[in-house]
Length: 281
Length: 173
Image (cartoon, rainbow over all chains, first blue to last red; front, side):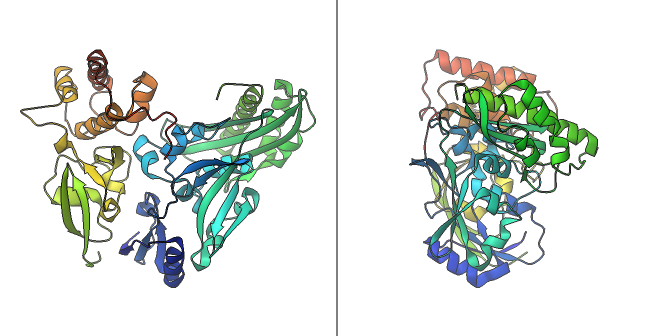
C-alpha cells in the first residue's frame, strides 16, 4: 500500500476525526506490518495510533483488558491468573513480527489465516470500539462478518477484553501449519466449562481452512451435557467435518483439511479438559 | 512514489539523528541509503531476517517498518555490535565455528542474538530458538550458527554476566 502522508494524532478523538475526514484515504497504523502487503493503488494517509496509550495489559474485574496496539510479544510474555493467550501468540509468525504486530491489527481486518479471531470467538471475548465514546460488543457480533463495517466514520478498535477463566474452565488451542512460522492450515480453539465431570458449556471455534473464522455449533452441541472424556471428544470432533465448509489450500485438498480439522478439534478439546482439571498454565 | 518530504528523528546506534524521508520509505531503505549497509535487504517481506535491527531493544524487521514509525525511538544496527577489528563475542564464535558461509544472514542473526542476550536471564534452548525463529540461513543448515550461539551464551553464563534488563517473563508493559 502506498503512503502519501503520515500523521501522529495526539489523542483518540483527534485520530478518529482525522480518519473520519480521510474516509477511504486514511488508514490507522499501529505495528504497520500488514500495510506492506495491502495492494490498494490509491495512496493513503497513515494515522499513527501507537502513541495514544493503547499498548497495555491489565486485569480489571472479571476481564483481562488488552489495548488494541499491544504487540503480540507482550501478550505472549504476560502471565496472569489462568492466562491462556500466550500459547497462540507464540505460534504466530516470527519473533520480529510478534515484537511489532498488534492484537488490533490481527483482528481489525480478518485475513483468512488469522489465529486470534478463532481464539477470541472461543474465549467469548468482548471488543471495545471508540466512536466518540467507547462501546462494547461480543466476539460473536464482531466476527459475524469482516469488521471493516464497524470502522466507517473513523471509529477505532481500542481494546480486547478476555474473560478471566474460572477454576472449572479450561482452554485449548491448536494451530496446524506446515512449519513453525508458516500461516495456519487449520486453527482450532476450545473453551470448556466442566461441572462434576460433565461438560456444562462449550465454545469451539475454527479458522483457516474455512472462508472466515466461525464457531462450530455442531461440535459444541455434541459436547454439552456429556462426560468430559476422550470418547465424547472423539464424537464431537467427528461432527467437525460437517460443521463448516472446509476448503483446500497450499497444495492440500479439502478432504485433507477436513481431517486435519477433526484431529485438531480433538487435540484442542483434550488440552482444554486438561487445563480445566488443573494444568499448570 | 510520493515526493512529500518529512523529517524523522531517532537515536541511531547511540547518536541522535535526523533524516529526511518520505511517508512510505522503509526503515531499511533509509538505513542503507545513509550508509548503514550492514543491515541487509533479503526477502523484503518479513520472512528472512537479514534486515533485523533493534528497535528499543527488540528485534524488528526493518523491511516491514516505515522509517516514520521510528520517530523518537532507539534504533540499533549491526554497526553497533562490533567491528572487523573488534568483533563481539558472538561474531568471534561464528567465525570460529565456520558458521559464516555467504554471510548474508549473519548481521540479522547477530542482532536477534543481541536482543536475546540483553533481555533474557535464563537462556534455555526453547527461549533461544524463539528469539532466533525469524532468521533464515540458506547455507549452513543452522547447526554451526547454533553451536556458535550456544558457546557464546554458555561463556556469558560462566562469566556471570547479567543481562541489561530482567527476564521478560511476567513483564508487563
